[in-house]
Amino acid sequence: MVVTTETDRPHWVQTVLIGRRPKRTAVRIVVLVVVCFVWFRFVLLPIRVQGMSMMPTYTENRVNFVNRVAYLFHKPMRGDVVAIRTSGISIMYMKRIIGLPGETVEFHAGQAVIDGVILDEPYLKYNCDWELPPKLLGADEWYVVGDNRDNSNDSRMWGPLQRKFIYGKFVSKYYSAS
Image 1 (cartoon, rainbow, N blue to C red):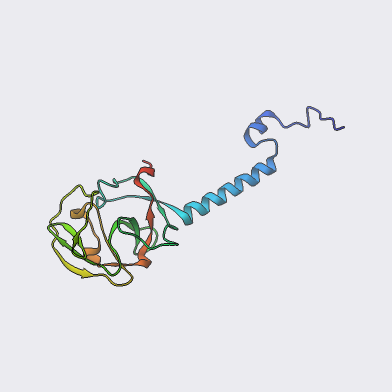
Image 2 (image 1 turned 90 degrees about the horizontal axis):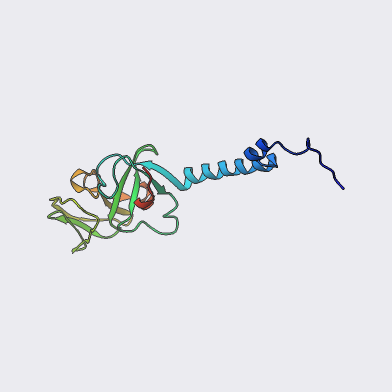
């Protein structure tokens, strides 16, 4: 039979702060820190939105997350809002994919036309008056634009993007925090 004395028991402050087994608590903390580091460095990258090109869908100065593993098993799809990396991790653009590889993209009276069919874009709130001639996308090219078309620097200026520049998919705006 083991008899414990008052001096063998941890003080109540220690029990509240680090538990009855400090080594186990330290291991849990280290594991949690490592998991959080890996998760927010390599899986979900927090990004602060700056600029008006995706308004009103994504407002300025909100924090959103980019899912970097979203496209491991499938290619980017039409309607996806993606992070575009052109020169390092510190500067990225947020744009919506409207044109997929092999399609023809054009604009008439501000409306996107994909392979001769007007694209339904319920997320657009601001009209624009773009007139752009047809552009045939290559086998590894995506056409991206902002939701606020008159205030967007996008594929009409840069041209179509190759897959290597698409960094990840933005997590739904409903998960963003102020």
